[in-house]
Image 1: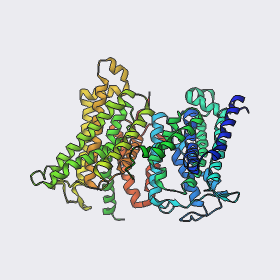
Image 2 (image 1 turned 60 degrees about the vertical axis):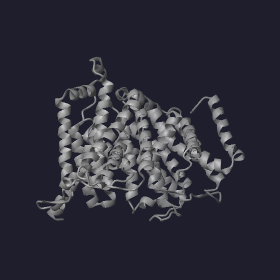
Image 3 (image 1 turned 60 degrees about the horizontal axis):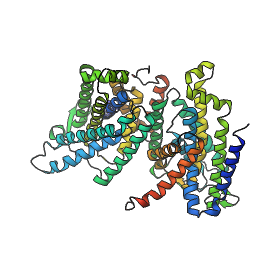
Image 4 (image 1 turned 120 degrees about the horizontal axis):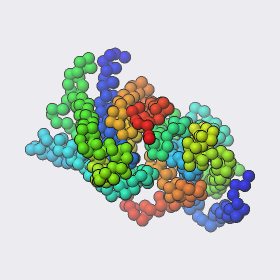
Length: 291
Length: 297
């Protein structure tokens, strides 16, 4: 399967090689808190860009779906405080969390299956805010307002996940794989039908494709992508709270995707990088007197 | 579960639904005419409450104006919210008509700014209005017993707002123009109607209703920061369930959501939010346009 032209492959290779050498060039703060953060949030923005550009669905539920994965992994994590009922090793917890996110994505797709444009935006926003309020009010599963702390992530090659190099390279590898996955999927028959639905769902239905099924499947795939982002964000923040999946977090991901242009999947990561830099440094330019 | 308990919870749901209706019908009105999703609607609610309180508080403390303070607070709250709404429409939303994602982003941005400015100006302390003597204290209701009279006033006010809006939309020239605008804006403009002016009027009206809701809500329960998100969510859900741009649908949606919220909190306290979403998902599965919404043509 030719995912892109040879020239594009070379460019992508150079880009990845550059990102691989970043640890040699940058101090750990930049590596983890700017580039690492841009990668993990960029994955969530990538899922939104995928839905918006190839399916025409601007879904605000992607942060919520990332939150489903984040809460799932936090509830199953062996180190979590408070410890969940079923503490599993990370090797099991992470795939299960991503599975849960894919499922949540499919459910969101199913709820919104007959709506588009502004209605879809409203419904997904309502679901996102509702889930965060639910997590905030529920103690039994989500530990309410405090959320779940100390989700440190697995050890990779005997090194803790929180080591800057381990975190950065893991985030980079996951992000690159998901990025290539998106580029691959949109050239498969499934991806082509999705773009046909974006251009005209009635004509696509008339040719004989099941529009609803494709929509739900695309939301499930976007959920899978956002799920990886959610897991990595939870490790990055060493835990998860209702406010980290609330309205402002949802809007943050939307802003990243919009800065990136809601066009090419690469834009999601560029948008996330700009957002991370703004979020970190803007307060030192204006409003530094505030807490 | 006694009959008295059942009726009390139902009446609580009804009074909550009244507040939801007052706020959400402004949202629905704005959406119906302009296809603008005003993500800052919850902020307008908050603006109404905070500005209303800033006017009300010194008046209430003074002896001469204490009895009129609440009414003046309401007028100030409506005025402030309507003014903010008018500025939003004229300065930002009017010239990006039809670009829905852009409008959604702009209103979200405005709501963040408004919430921050309210925190900076008024501080984070919760407050509440005291209703005038006539609406203060309990009243004897058959079977239920003593019930806050202000809660009952909320229901009457919501009915008044609903009837008023119905009359406005169905019996006045402005109403005819608004309804024509819902169907075809371009044709309306071609008929010589100043559509931007109508849009600004409707936006101010919808925003004013949010401000009215803010003062009423802050009289019924203490007001604090963060309610903007709650009321935005509620407006979205009520309008999605009831159907866009329909006053009757908004009333029905508000009733369903208000009752579901109160009963949900009684029956399964920590899961009550889910009940709201089960209702939303069910309605969308069966009636994608909402209960009383029209099919898009």
